[in-house]
Amino acid sequence: MEKVPMTVQGEQALRDELDKLMKRRPLISEAIAEARELGDLKENAEYHAAREEQGICEAQIRDIEYKLSVAQVIDVTKIPNNGKVIFGTTVTVIDVNTDDELTYRIVGDDEADIKQNLISVNSPIARGLIGKMEGDEVQIQTPGGLKELEIDQVQYI
Image (tube, rainbow, N blue to C red; front, side, top):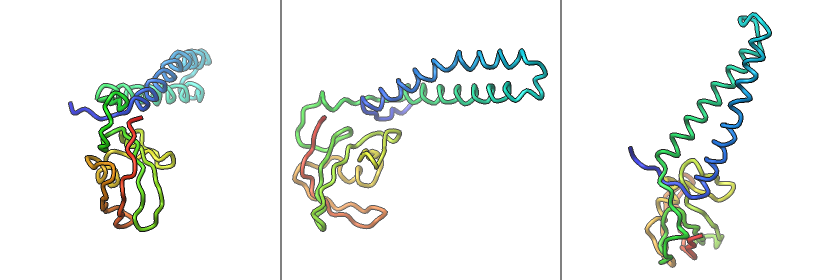
């Protein structure tokens, strides 16, 4: 089974979500039991809604348990910072053409959220940055065109 990289924060978010779902389980079972008492199950909307919710909840639990089972949690705060871009680092880059400064954190696929500047390790920008050093200039082909970036700062936070 191939391991999937995940940050400590990503693992915690999954564990929190799993905990929430596990607490919902008995409430859903209760709703099913109450709906059963209402009689004819064929025309019992409450029963069918509760069963559907149970199916969704169980599928989400299985999904999270699987993700946790294949996760390789990487804590960059425990790795000495040598200025190299690796999974989990926070990288500040400067667009050579526009002088815009951008900061990205390289995270696992499930954690990626561009609005929070969390980019997937499999994204074109992350793939272009990984393995490079602070001060390096890189050219990265993105869906929006060729980007020329200078790596200004690499943080292991």
